[in-house]
Length: 110
Picture: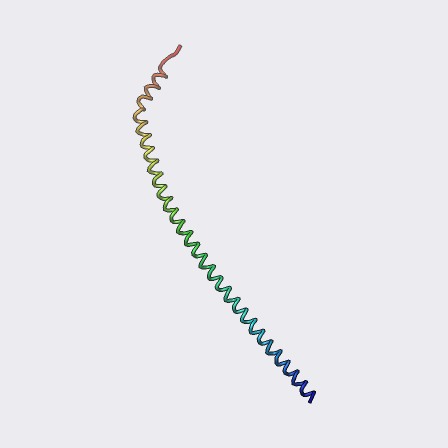
């Protein structure tokens, strides 16, 4: 009977060991599944954040481009106004300059 009892004890220990191994394997698989899920969630959040930052960048870029177009137009208007002013001044004093040059060129100094 002692041998039979020892055999049953060994069988119980083997069964307990197998059950423990199944529990460990199930826990390991659950952990791997959770890690995979966490990785997918992190990638999804990163993609959303990246898209949000990109949208913000594009919005700011569009604002700056709009400002740039307005600045270009304003600078063109200022440049045209200055050119027009210089042309008017040149037309107004050109006769005086011609007379002064003729006077200096034709005057003989001793």
